[in-house]
Image (cartoon, rainbow, N blue to C red):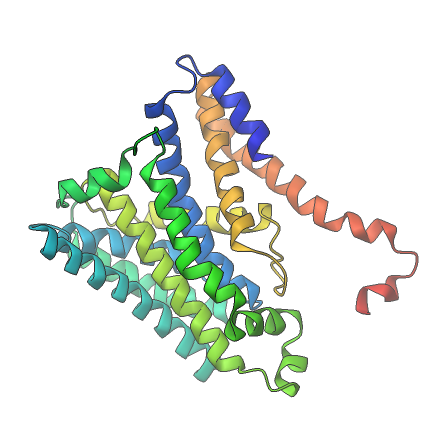
Length: 307
């Protein structure tokens, strides 16, 4: 789906396949892709994280304060922002596991707190970022390869691949498939959930850092946080991850994010009213969800669903 939509976009775009066009598209797509990865991890455990957008915004605001100065100071600021994101995710996981609260309620509440912190840091938009670092991560490398795509590949290699192949990662899939059976099998349910939400917060913070590098500023925008939260869920579904948990991949969510981003670009090049964008996104989301339901038509006996 992504290849077809993106090919249509490039064919229709006036300047065609140029480095600036590809770099701009990549930067926008990678932003959502990283947040979609953050959403994927809790969803695999049959949970959901409605605070990812607010952690994303909080990281953006914090980075606009800390990722400045010399390269050493900026690097320290990046580490602090990432640690903050992991801490936010850890708080979500601890409340869900030990407080035994529903993920949707917990993350709505914590997301509100995180946005309040962002607003305290940035009552009005502003701030700055280390320019050399920003240019290195949002420009293009030799050969015209966007740096943001390399960053996304690094995040996948360092976070998703080890997590997916680890015992904790397999435990998350087991929990999403059948938590009761996983518990009876000795799966570390609490540890797996806390890890999933902690990594979710870390990934959301990485997305917020990238936003700061792109915009050179920070802004506590509730609409921005809400949009990224909802779009991350849509990207997860389009990417083939089941909202019931137990099946899916962050790689699919990445391509789901690219599909959503390219839809907006298509509307631009075809000179359509931006108000049509939610309609197109909704149609594609409905189509993606329907594909996962086609297997039901093949069942002769509905009891086969519970095998």
